[in-house]
Image 1: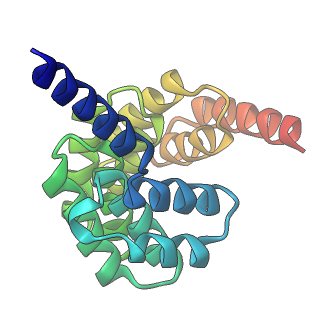
Image 2: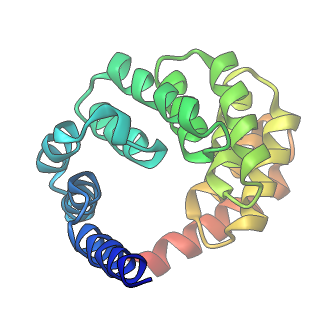
Length: 194
């Protein structure tokens, strides 16, 4: 019985020592996120790159992809967003950012597919609806664009750009009264932000 008690105490001590021994990857993740939030994207990328690839989670791959996109490296950014989705297929930020990358490259069908998936996994994220509307506008699908700009506005009614693009869409739909109404809201919101 004394041996079992001694073994139990030894296991407790070992467990406590292991708990105190911090995971280097989680420390690197925290450090990288802190640098990223301070807009030190190069520092954040260096820190994330020091992590073992097997220790990177979906969030880290999205942040790395964002950094690469900011550094005008879309091919690597797309790779990182896809890695994020391999780890978490419901990561709406990865779909949204993939959509942005495809939109920048004028690959509108791919952008639309990714914005729709972003909406599926986070129907409250206004910018997915907005960018979906941008794609539809570029494809001359003004009724669909209007629908998505309005949906974005219901999710975030204080974003001036939503109203600006809705105004442009109403102009294309030959509705000058609605276009003026949306432009007036845009102007008001823009002036409030100044």
